[in-house]
Image 1: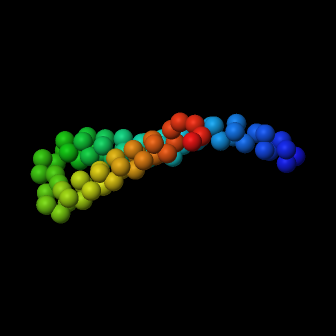
Image 2 (image 1 turned 90 degrees about the horizontal axis):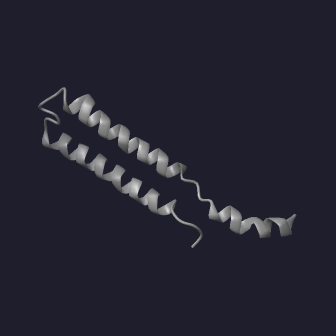
Length: 79
């Protein structure tokens, strides 16, 4: 049993799960769609205040950075 596990380790390590990237990328897509179509097109004064503008920019930047990080982490084979 132990030998079989040791022999299968490279095979198991080669297939990294892309699920974290898909989840965060989906959140980024939903965020962009809600901002553009759900809020931005219906309310010309959006975001309204400087604080709200900074919050939207901060959330967007955080989602983009996390999506890029997940793309790097889940890409490629074993190091």
